[in-house]
Length: 248
Image (spheres, rainbow, N blue to C red):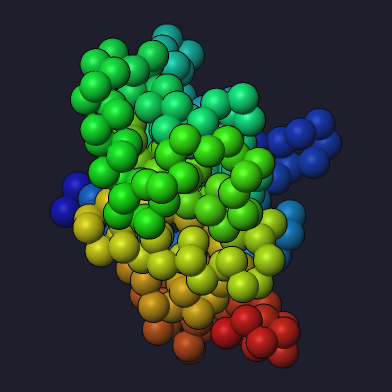
């Protein structure tokens, strides 16, 4: 098993606020890693560093063995190999669903418009939104918009899919439809790193769960161990609050 994405000793601070304090993480191919932890634990910052949306202060991020944090690396070329989805859907409001999905494959990856359109329609068909291909984002529900955002990320055929709290802005009844799509993508072998508060989903789908606390990976392992029988007192404390809130 080879690591597609590897984080080595990454440090990131915003002024005096040190958010990541030497984080190590290895993500093997065709595996799902769930990042859990409270607000401010560093989950989102870690994903932003991995996608080069933030410059690391120390340490390295490797993609397929290449140090992508080397300042000589073309960051735009690296981002073409990544699929990133955030809490906000970030769809272009002036483009139709189909144009949102085909934009990067055509403009960035140089695929023909017909090939990109055919693949986009197949992806939209798979998630039951082919009939919405001509609609604009504001005509879709939040859950539909987020599923389109995931399909847009998949359309570039990424080496790894980075998902940052993709259900946190959704109404509870829409969360399930988005998570079903992520589960399907995972079952098809996509390498995924996702920050999530959906502990039940992490327990069922993730291969590895990493608990972040105050900028470090405090505990990491199989879901049954980290979520069911955690070693660290801080992990147990965090999960007890989650259980009390009915999220696990």
